[in-house]
Length: 121
Image (spheres, rainbow, N blue to C red):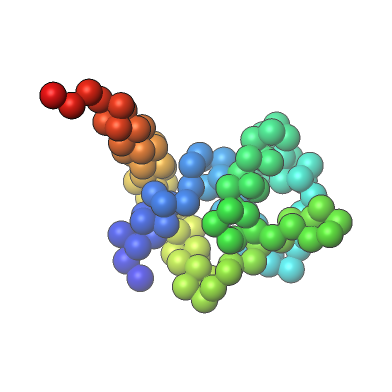
């Protein structure tokens, strides 16, 4: 798997540095069930930021919530299980490259939205 593959996952699924940090944190112990408060403490973030990150990862099928409100890292498919460690590795070696991918993807989506509202002549 290439760096481009890892960055594509970040670009497509990660919307903040905190969510990226969460993606790095949770796979370290795949058997662990986390309470939202524990995530907030581990990220050194407030509860809103922790819940937004958990929600974002839940939407892209990496985090599951059980009936007790506990969060677990569970990739939805083998490809995700393979890609996430690659992202973590690239983030460890080249954190700025990976972090810069996040705002770049948001800027592209914002530009698409702006372009949608331009008047055509």
